[in-house]
Image (cartoon, rainbow, N blue to C red):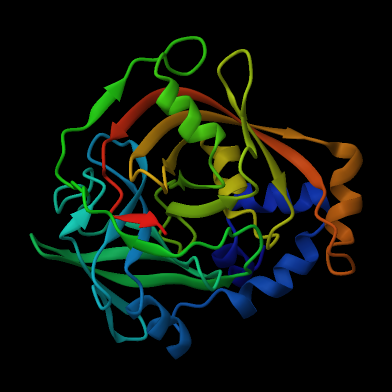
Length: 315
């Protein structure tokens, strides 16, 4: 394997790409689309945001999907390889103690009303009580597929410092109907995944990605597992590649009407529909038909609930 391909994709991503027959095309695309610097367009985009989704691994080696909030400008980019993020507001889980200098984390900027999103995987170079500074390892854009448009207003009851409530699990996820409805009514969630074998390559570390669909696209089966039909995306397989090598991931759901949020630590499994995989993946440039090619199955390990932890409400 040449160094360029190795630094674009890790072993898990290559396994997924080979399974669907796109490894050659991804070998060509990776070096062109995944950069170590942010273009000016991405820098301007990040600086315009009022929320930034984050995937990180905490001091307990637990992968977490979360979100940081702030006024427009709470994220700044002094040069094409650096972001500085104000840490004042989160759902209640993330502080300056959550990560250390040298940690590799994932960031996702998403503007719901325009359906724009850009991702960067970064290394933490400085963190204090007010800000976190990160250096870009991988920067790339994502298409607007599956993003459900939303217009946001402030949550008057937002409480980013409320106590975290761990929800007791039962055979059907939770005895709390609120938790079940937050999952099954969702049209959006975020997933943090991680693969880090100690190699100092840009494609190691924690990543965060978006999943979206019509309300109800996340189902709960009789065993209490979450089932999500996974459709064709950018073909990079960042999340699925991580899951193949490390099945423990974190899911972030939020109630856009009430402002509550939940984090789920889950064990993941990919259920491949081999009859459709190759046909759909190879035809993806020639059709706009979105067909299911695999199902993601998540078995909950832990659920944490953040009452009014989401700083915005959908108008």
